[in-house]
Length: 103
Image (cartoon, rainbow, N blue to C red; front, side, top):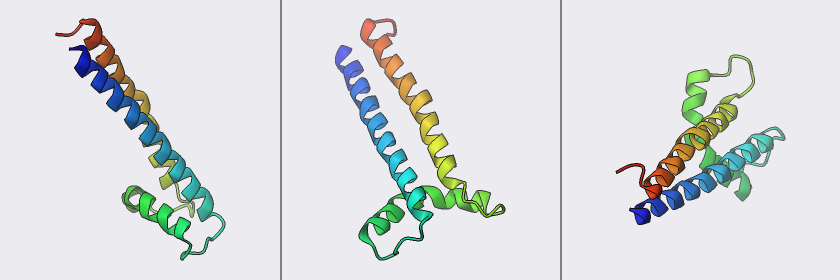
């Protein structure tokens, strides 16, 4: 059972790293959007291509009533929720499984 527990721990750690990287990509994309970047720049195109699938549905729900785009903040909060709740729970479950508390 310890092999499955180690697999869960590895998957949880990889998901944690991927979520952290995506969170930083969202932050960088939000910061770049403040300076009116060149839309043909490959870095800007990459950032938009990666972040728009997550930001677009939130923008549709929230809208631009205040003139400020809060969708990056909502995505970052969702990422933090997943990291602190789901990833931590998965790691704790794997350690309990490894100790033999759960069978």
